[in-house]
Image (cartoon, rainbow, N blue to C red):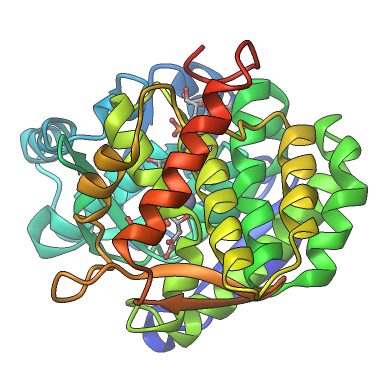
Length: 373
Ligand SMILES: NC(=O)c1ccc[n+]([C@@H]2O[C@H](COP(=O)([O-])OP(=O)(O)OC[C@H]3O[C@@H](n4cnc5c(N)ncnc54)[C@H](O)[C@@H]3O)[C@@H](O)[C@H]2O)c1
Ligand SMILES: O=C(O)C(=O)C[C@@H](O)[C@H](O)[C@H](O)COP(=O)(O)O
Ligand SMILES: [Zn+2]
């Protein structure tokens, strides 16, 4: 087992990465302060993994299991309300702990419920998708979506611990594995060129679910994210680099109706758009776009914007991005591979050209595998 720490003073916590973390002496029980627990999961993950988690918790005075319907379309205020209703009905007090067992959707909603319930209770993340293991379980961003925008209602609330059991990745559908790889690739692009190079070589092993390769990708990703979060917990500055590709990606997810495009798929296309802008500024060699396209394609990720999503719709949705300051759009670009920066001077005309070209590229290559075809 490998242990990392997210260093945030009194809110610091460990991230455990290993196999079979729920057997033997319970790591989980050690991070639960009171005698009350609510497990939050969904109807796909609960039958697979909740029993193991329940056993690892041992005897509890109060144990509630909350099973949400599966899907990004349920990352809503209604699901949040359902969790809060159940906690109140079962008389959970302020020393209860929520344990999120699932992907980023479950983790984000359960974390937000923990932030809200009686003004804040403990929670532990047990992420079961690659995406949640490398990204969403670490860092304390919690939220639900709104029809007008992704993660628009939420809070910063750090977990007490993150338990990453890599065995869970064996049941993960192939498309979901690819979605997680998009966020892994993101770390290489924004802050670690050596890791980016390693990913080019390791991609076949990652796709074959080679345990050593997956563990290395998870450890390196979590370590990079922990460093950024420790330096800027609430996204006052540096943390925004973790948003590479997300301004475009969130617009795609919102426009397509949450769940049609996976978060990682939308981010993959968004990162390519950000790279093309960086090339246009003369910061990157055009060959870098081709290198990223090859890597995303090898991972099984889309390269093109959705059909019918033109510049006007992109610009309308991107104007609601959380990084907008005083009406000014801010985008994460790359000065070099491994060196991200945030700019606020990309003009609407520049974006229109970029997005019109992306639409043209999409329409001139029909029949390729895409989430919406
Ligand atoms: N808080 C953050 O910092 C952060 C970071 C990145 C992404 N996110 C959010 O995370 C969400 C995406 O997370 P995701 O990609 O994990 O999606 P997800 O939670 O929808 O999970 C993907 C699918 O895999 C299933 N699943 C989960 N674990 C499984 C397993 N081990 N075996 C079989 N099936 C399994 C789920 O039921 C679901 O159908 C988005 O809402 C995104 O906005 C948040
Ligand atoms: O942890 C962060 O900070 C991130 O930006 C990680 C992203 O991968 C993640 O999708 C996050 O939820 C996006 O945050 P948002 O503030 O743009 O909603
Ligand atoms: Zn993301």
